[in-house]
Length: 229
Length: 310
Image 1 (cartoon, each protein chain N blue to C red):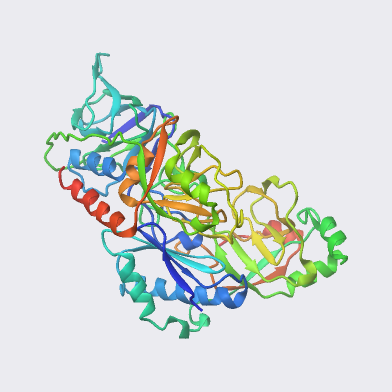
Image 2 (image 1 turned 180 degrees about the horizontal axis):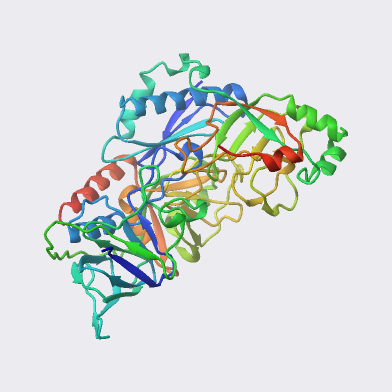
């Protein structure tokens, strides 16, 4: 449920759906996000520059010369966006992942913490239907959930200086995929050859907030022969 | 015959920018765009371009460029110290905010901005730049934009369009606001901070540090004490937000900000004061003044109206 709308400076608003970080709350955020995106594309509302969902909030930025926050707030309050099913806009995406020990850098750490075997950890990961909570920090990087509780672990105490592009990591109930080489503190369990983000493609990002992700295990050989379309 | 500028020296942080790339923040792509919209606007106005035409933005020291090809009408906007050097090596002091014609072999040497950070170079007809998702803005961090998403580099060639429009020089007078007070509205997590810190934020001075770029401006001053939580659930970020990480020192998030972040925000810079803010140089002491939405909105109307003076 949308709890509160507040101004962020003079050219942004935040729609707050409460303090919980769970799929139920995030699905409400994504419904409003889908509605705003569709309204912008269909020119039902003018002056909207960006709309950014996160776990429990949607932030909307606008061009102050074209529209004011009051009008956007009225537009949202006067619509019944929550009735639109996510399946109308969102899709299920299969992402190949190679769990070879060359890429599963933190598997030992996870085995110790979870008391599960490598194989059991992989199976838990493969059997999870992940929901795309949000995408960001850097272009195309998805934040997926929820992992089974048995796999929960904290961040690394000392983040790695460099994590390779395509690395798949887990922390607490979340899973992420690094779309650029960057520093990071997630527990790395594998690697995908799939390019999730390419600014030069019409479809810039394979994933959109609200999509569902299923991982599919591939061999090291599959990984090296994989071709991005 | 193709016309271009040869880059003999790129400058510190020279990138192509326009008004920004919008509608992609939910995929992790920030809008970017020119830091100082008024100066960007002025540089295009001076050469008779449409005001959203991509321009070359530079910070502190700009590029040294040599024209190869037919003569062209160009302009440098901002408070800028620059020279124009002709084929024979004769050097003439350039005049910013006034368009001028350069010919084959002429060099434009942008030495430095004066008591300010950013300036712009525009050319009649515009630079030949590859539009990516509707914009020629450069986001170096993600390698998005013309020039393969890079800053300008030595030996780059900057091609430009030949214009059939009449070459007409123009001069614009303007002055920077030298006052160091920046108006802000309360941030989403304003109440996370102690009463004393809320007062300190609006009464003490905060110094612009060297750790400032297109992504953010790090400030230094009285530590701001968060009494609720040092981290929040990551949420979308808006340009001009002032976040306070665990060390209690403010960071103003600027045009190339991350799309999502998890630090509490004490305030947001109002749109009308953004250009003024980004021009504040290292070492200056800023003061923040609290205003409400209606004041921010009317200040923006005055700001936009000022564009019509040029």
